[in-house]
Length: 153
Image (cartoon, rainbow, N blue to C red; front, side, top):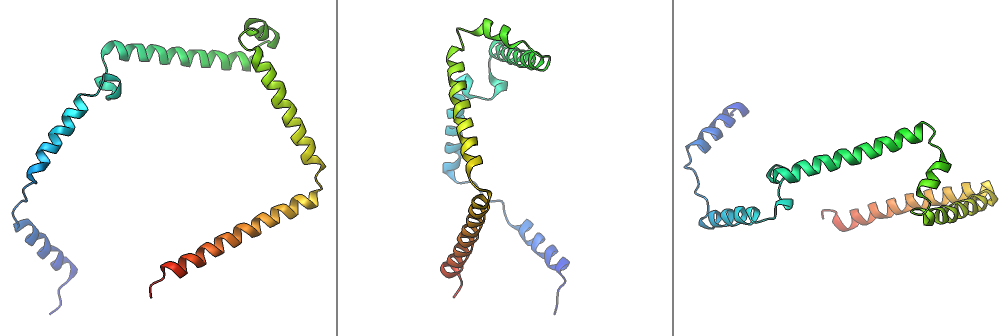
C-alpha cells in the first residue's frame, strides 16, 4: 500500500496537531524575568535609542547634524579649490606635526616607488608566478589533508 507524499503530510500534520501543548520548564520563567530585569537595569546609553531621554536624543541629532555639516563644508571647500595657503595659515599651530608626518610618508613612498622601479620586470613576473604556484599547492595540500582526515571509511 503506497501513500502519496501529500497524504503522508496531512497525516503527520493531523497527528502533530492532536498532541497536547508542551509546558515550558519551570526555570524558564525565572530566567526570562531575570533577563528582563537585567536589561531594564542597564544605563540609558546602553539601551536602545528609543529609550534614551528626550534631551539626549535631541543632543545626539544636533551633534550628528553638526558633524555632517562640517564634513559637507570641508568637501565643498576642497572641491571648490580651497586655498592651501589659507588652510595652512588658519591651522598652522594645530597641524604642524601633520606636515612632518606627511613629509615622512612622502619620503617612504618615494623610496618604495624607486625600489619597485629598480626591480626587473622578469623578477616581478617570476615572483607572481611563484606566489600563484604556492597558493595552488597550499589549496591542493589542504584539500588532500581534509579528504584524508575527514573521509568516511
